[in-house]
Amino acid sequence: MKSFDPPRRILMGPGPSDVSPRVLAALSRPTVGHLDPAFQGLMEEIKDALSRLMNAPGYACLPLPAPGTAGMEAAIMNLLEPGDVAAVAVNGQFGERMVDMAGRAGAEVLRIEHDWGTPVDAQKVADALKGRKVKTLGFVHAETSTGALSDPGPLCAIAREAGALTIVDCVTSLGGVPVDAAGWDADVIYSGTQKCLSAPPGLSPFAMSPRAREAVSGRKEKARNWLLDMGLIMSYWGGEGGRTYHHTAPINALYGLHEALVVIEEEGLAAAHARHRAMHEALVAGLEAAGLSLLVAPGNRLPQLNAVKVPDGIDEAQVRSRMLAKYSLEIGAGLGPLKGQIWRIGLMGASATPWHVRLCLTALTEALAAQNYPDAGKAALAAAEAKLG
Ligand code: PLP
Image (cartoon, rainbow, N blue to C red; front, side, top):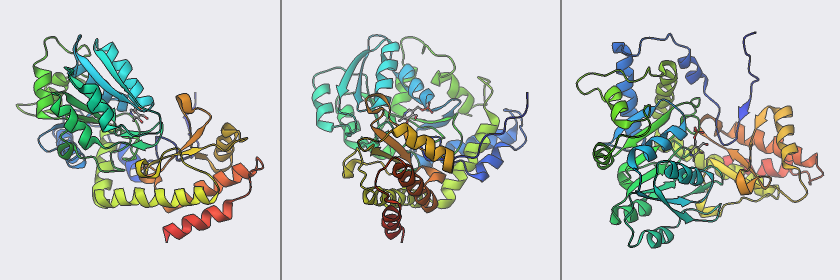
């Protein structure tokens, strides 16, 4: 065996995004023991920073030791017991994953179907919940499979009225658009580190409201997962009355998350959101000047995930391979019913810069022109430049 030397890539797919050199440097700092007082100080800082980032005062906030899917699994397995009814709004791949997990938790699943590419519709959800005894309502804030943004406030209000707890997937939204646990009155919010936080994958920021904590401690039977049993994890992260060993925290990964949180606080959350929006507007202007169109209607688009329709007659996989080979630039393909129909261009965290927008438009228009699509590189760059100012 030899040491692994990865190729240098520019990551503009659905995640992971580019990891900043500051975060990479933090990851390589000396490992300490997970019960070391210095490390416990870092754990406290991470909890506080997550609470600010998600606007979750009074919530239990911590990073779970596994990727975004762990947040989904922790939420579902801790809140649901066999026989409960779990409503899930499905408007893409990740709502679909929630349905699968809720079924595995032994819940009766009430699917609330939507077309892929549309946001979750509050009226549809209200109609589906009417007259039902529902334990949870799950939905995805930022559907990475389609690029659609949903509005959690009204959905959480409907759930509250129906007596249901809410599970809000914020894997792709956190850091790119406002996430407002308290303002939405949400119960569980989870995210991932590899999207707009620009840390490597492997951790899942998680926030749980006092109401959700009460529901977890009032369970009739123990949660069926051990690692992600929130009662056990909180005795490790809680810090009240001393920490009890539960697992060994991924120490260096937490150095990386800590640095990513420092970076975002230095920039300012509002400034980070504005940067994502500005880069999205420049990219879309460039794409439209090249004759391309987006899957999602203008008011419902995620700035950080742009689903671009593949023009007729274009081999979409060949476009992606050429961009990777020539520019070392990764963009994503479509999933499920959108396979072969869209590209997914991420503008997440450190990958949301004018340089990334310019490079992507250059590489994409060139790859299209190589398949006899009209050469639109100059027009695309001029349109983006006009927005970048
Ligand atoms: N939810 C959404 C909306 C996602 O985009 C993803 C990953 O892309 C996940 C959940 C799962 O996260 P992970 O791949 O980190 O487990």
